[in-house]
Image 1 (spheres, one colour):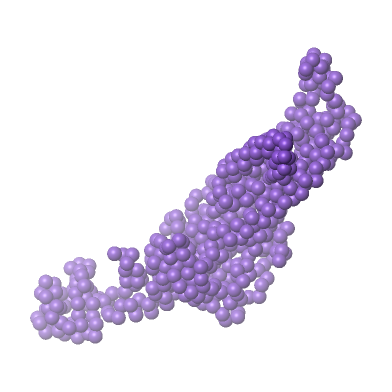
Image 2 (cartoon, each protein chain N blue to C red):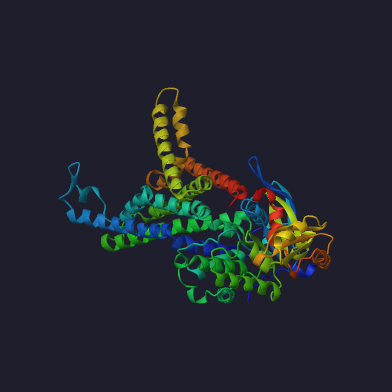
Length: 268
Length: 316
């Protein structure tokens, strides 16, 4: 049964998550990504015809608008740094609290273990949503002020929305790893190494899939976790149902296994 | 003001804490073996044992922090582990905090998870442990003793009926130790709490507790009221004897049935254990042998002797 005071648990966890070093860093970096996207676009516009890519001036190959700026910001956000920071926050919330023995103090309270995990997961989900919001508002808002409001805002908004469940997939993986390794750095390194291996394997499978009678290899690559975590990219090149089903499965599997572990683990 | 709104369990007349057949193994090592103990409401119960005896493991099992391999735990008759904890405040080992948060914020977190306690309760708890003026400082600036006191404040959040505390005066200076002892006594006397203290500090337990359980190598080797246990264990009477010729007295005592010289006391006195012989009878025997007896001083048996006798393997 859900504790009657679950909302208090969630709000307390959220406050803790946002005030912790990893939470503050995630919000600040999200803001920096938004501002850098605006700065980068402004620089590109300023250079205009002087700078060129493949012989074509920048102002001919780039579209300068608020929507484009927010689009670049989203890609930069999802590429590397924010996922790392979200993994750090996840590690601090589970592995860090286990190691510092502050998790024990929560488990001694009259609430079921699953509700503690749920409160922490929800708090991390809100942190992820806030980082998306900060990047979107800063890059989109300032971009629109500087470059105008033209552009395709609808697909971009879907891209931002779709990034949230992708983040949840990453958080779920992070929670599972955190409950096994119980070390913050190992959570970040472990998931990143796995995703790197996943990427290499998908590339290999795609290559093998081009060989006659081995097309199945390419199909397998589409169901791998790395592909699922990139579901948000659908706003750029068309939505892929397989990725979304994979993402849902990944979240369910990771959270399910993490919950089993959390319910049974000894907490010294 | 939000309070622990469960029915007052102490009124039901059931034991505050009942442990039956508790067993916990770590690999091939049995940390706690078939442990049975009972703590009545209003008790200040001392849970004694040498390091590694299984005290903290027992507390963790009671709180559900670690799994039990066998056994049952009832708190005020309740077996559901979540509902049990409604009535329990606990400090296991050294209390841990988010040290980048303030003392007050740490209490707020505990209140949120307990579902009880408002700002007034938190202020009261901080006041009670003497931390009101430092409540808004980050915990990382606190001394060890202050953290210990904040731990007690946190354990009191939600007005528990049973307090489980591991080494409550750990790291405190003598004044702090006394304050904590006074606080615990007050909680029992004024607020009707039951307190279960795990410790290896005999003097502290002797000063505080009315009942003790002694754990040795995962097994309960003695349990009961301190005075009764000490008396039952001893089965003899200990005196110190002042005589004019201790050497001759020592030789005479070897021939007296029911009296044993067990060592030297203060100021050249002899420590003598009497079984079936009264001090007056011994006095008459010694005087009859021409010795001048100037003093016979009865000696109190201490918990320490009971403890050493109950944990012999550890002492060796």
